[in-house]
Length: 344
Image (cartoon, rainbow, N blue to C red):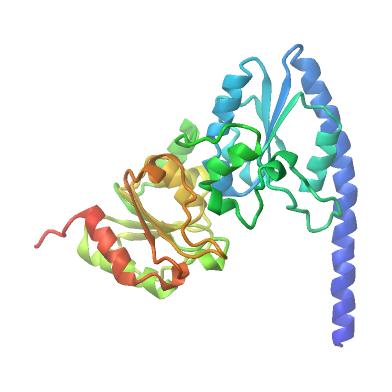
């Protein structure tokens, strides 16, 4: 029985692998033809690519690269290569002429090899491979400065590191998010209570998370102590509190809708994740919970306001994972940010 189960899993994997690879080659041809058409349409304008296809926090943190590239190439046709799930983060940027959806890193290799782009700013570190494709993506600029997955957080924040991987000077600018009026109207239609405390409790990596019991305890204390409503955002809910001033929006918002909710927050409290970068880019005051991540102990992913310590409290019990961050530290930070509660 176990042997049949293993064989089934193997053939299922092979099926998805070969379907993916066939689709990749078709996609390369189609996108090459599309880029040729773009070059024809753009006439004498050079075609410039910015490459950072994932993750959410990385793309938000590195938004200033688009502004820098526009300054360097004022007349260029500039596009951002991005994975489908993150298109929202770049499609409204005023310094970009468009975006190109990347199917996988291997597809990117073939597109870059065609020489269709007049200039490429590749922010990816080498050797982040597709799970199905044999090609190994390499960024010679990142390799030249010795930037690897083992040391990148020792070098500085995400923008500082990845801008150098792209061959740009080390950047420290404040990231921005561009939220269209249509998104703001959609969030307004949710009729959320004003000045909420917005929390984000669960990241894509368990090493970044804080225990669910601590989040529930914190939310109960916030609701019992302050008049501010509490909103949980993210993909999966962690908080189980039932209260008229608590609202769970997990799994109900797009990326830019999430950013708009955070923009309107009185305070953001969260772990190291994409929404924390949204808070930084949208000017929200925040409390960020950090902890040891692999071999990275003393690290800070954020540039701009949060790096300067403006409107932010960073909590890190150095040498311990985020899960071991004392509850009292977070409650004390909230007291400092929200002020002493008024006695009734």
